[in-house]
Length: 80
Image 1 (cartoon, rainbow, N blue to C red):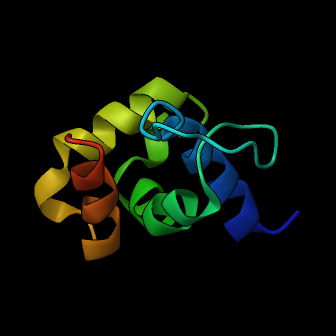
Image 2 (image 1 turned 180 degrees about the vertical axis):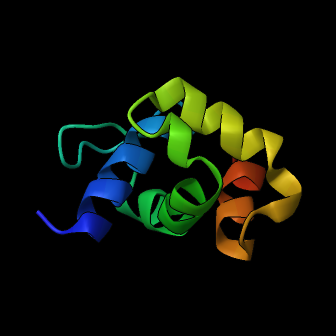
């Protein structure tokens, strides 16, 4: 499995609680678009938390000002 896919899969799990209509992908909840939007931010900002889905989500929220535009939009679209 490629590194990008692994990171995206981990991030997808972290975003599982964000989607009001989640879709199963790679065994996790969330959408592939949400996964893709935040995978680089999770890798860059939350490397120590990777593998702990709730911790990644919390980390991304704590680093909101540093998120990419696309990842920020994901959180914004879910009222976070």
